[in-house]
Length: 485
Ligand code: FAD
Ligand code: NAI
Image (cartoon, rainbow, N blue to C red; front, side, top):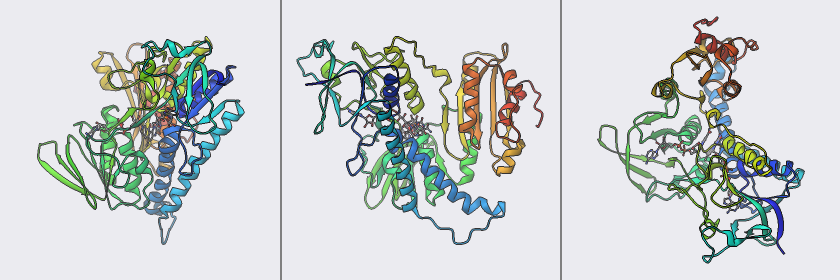
């Protein structure tokens, strides 16, 4: 006998588990199926984000930043440290504990919300004889979902939400072995600090993981195909980041073309540089972080006629509807930024749409954060995007070196920039590089969501001394009336 549900969510990453919680809150009988397990076979819900992404990377970024501060910044505060040492085993154990706390937290939330959780791979029932519409596998109880693993029942679902996430993209012909050629999982799990670390791709993973291992003592070289650094960020922010990363000793080469990668005791990468000159570099380890691919393997989507776009993402409309009736898809497995909070918002919106409500995700106000030091964060449009679109705008910038709290922290690098419409003063973007801008960016998101003007931000009373005063001052600077600069 199959277990009947209103909603079955496949995947318990940030998209899937959040969708399941919202569906259960709305009164639907809900199940969530996820196949991630710990090394010793325990269910580990949370997906890439919790297990090998957002959470463990931020744990290691924090630990490695403490280590760097202890070695280089504490003396300035009058704190002497003698015999500073690195216990990487303990650092990794702490990271594992943080991850486990998050897995357990999600299992607790499933229980609290009366969501049936099944651990194992799920697939749409149906074979090659099923028609392209998939209707033949949809009976009176809805879709049939099979879950492998002993004791798991077959499920039926009136609605299915596919949230199966993404997998790291390998260089053509260079498979990950997580011994010398590392994906994000391997990059987070090193048991020793490599003397030399190569990173292919100066994107978010490359910069964050490159920062972790550089702080812990590796000589890091990042090889990036594009001629421009951090192309998605505001150009002024990207220029500042380039300058600061170079000062920290992170070596980044732009405009390279990767050739042969050979593995012996170490890894040798042949490439041509931006001038077309042939080069070769040998590394103890190589992280390949050149983007991610949608993960649909094992779903049996083809058999039921689930449509994918030309890049392999599950094809969805603006509201995350697939081509199949009552089958929805969210998060990394569909178009749009591969971010945990984007996946979560889509999960909530889909559960609300199933309930006949008007769930909505505004892609213009999805914030981006890169957790390097200094941190980089932005929301909305860049100056280049505004110029290209012919939108008249005014920009206001405020440097952290003029902010009292930043001086007290001993971290005065970077700035906050607000971009506002020249006619209406409506905030069109906020771009920041500096201490804790991952937190400051929320003010820009709120301002944009509420259609605020830069004048609105400028007139809000911000606590003193706080880093958030840099946002207020940047808003004042839009009208050329900064008070402290
Ligand atoms: P996932 O988190 O990938 O979850 C999908 C789940 O579905 C997985 O558990 C998978 O095993 C399971 N699954 C797949 N197929 C099946 C099946 N057939 N049956 C059952 N289960 C299945 N984003 C941020 O916003 N902030 C960050 O700081 C951040 N840091 C990151 C750091 C790294 C190193 C990486 C790699 C990514 C980071 N991301 C970050 C991106 C973020 O992890 C993803 O955007 C997010 O996890 C996507 O969520 P999701 O729910 O779509 O998929
Ligand atoms: P990415 O898309 O951020 O960066 C990949 C980089 O590799 C790009 O700069 C690209 O030009 C470069 N590249 C591609 N092919 C190349 C090649 N053959 N040779 C050299 N360079 C090449 O992808 P990344 O860093 O792998 O991250 C994957 C996803 O995970 C991102 O989409 C990001 O959204 C998410 N993520 C988010 C984080 C955050 O929010 N803080 C942290 C880490 C990851």
